Image 1 (cartoon, rainbow, N blue to C red):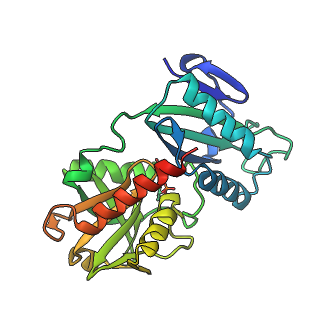
Image 2: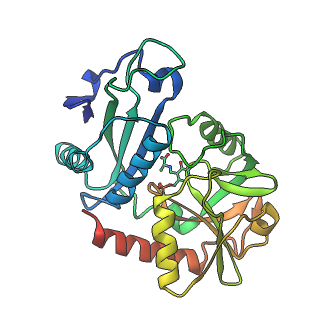
Image 3: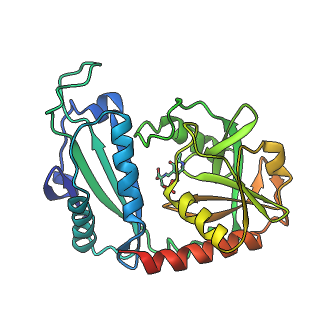
Length: 284
Ligand code: PDD
């Protein structure tokens, strides 16, 4: 049984409790982060900590969270759960208060929950060799997708739709342009140029995206941060996604149409290798 963290306590998972009045439960008034663990170490913790603070600031969540304490909690969970490869999920909500649309008093303590998910073989995923199949769906999420809130019903519906269609995931489309995947950022490669949507309120500012684009530029690859259409994606040489849980993952089919040779391309293979090598070295 896992040991999880709830508001200062480390508890067996079946003893952990939060209030029925928690605003995360009632209003999806909470933010989260998912950090990967390789070799028992955290991948890009500073990036996730910075984005957590940004999400909280954007929602005027005033709770003070000390990022050194948060790092220690992540490490303690790795130790207590003997985690070598997997994920740590962190959620912070505006806390428990009688149900009211208005925010509760700023002294209301936040709810802080963390748990581990062991995923042996995360880095050696078979899908990195075969590639993923994607379907496109309309992007019906709210307008502040740059804030990492726990309102994940639409992405969850999108994954189910992909599954029903025999695919692995969905890319969301707005005004003819791909925004991002249900839980990852989306990219295409055409004539050696990597194209991914620019940052804005329409997509989550992926921590993996930031690192991968920096590595790509260091390796003298060309990068364009701009919207791309579904038609461009279908005509691309390669396609891929990035996230903390998939790192860099090739896409070989979109809406039933084969991308490139129908097998993972050279650019994505190289980016995955560089990313994993560098992030293992930098993990803390
Ligand atoms: N999802 N876009 C969306 C909508 C996401 O939910 C995620 C992450 C990303 C990639 O961000 P990052 O590289 O920081 O993981 C992009 C996490 C992994 C999840 O919900 O499980």
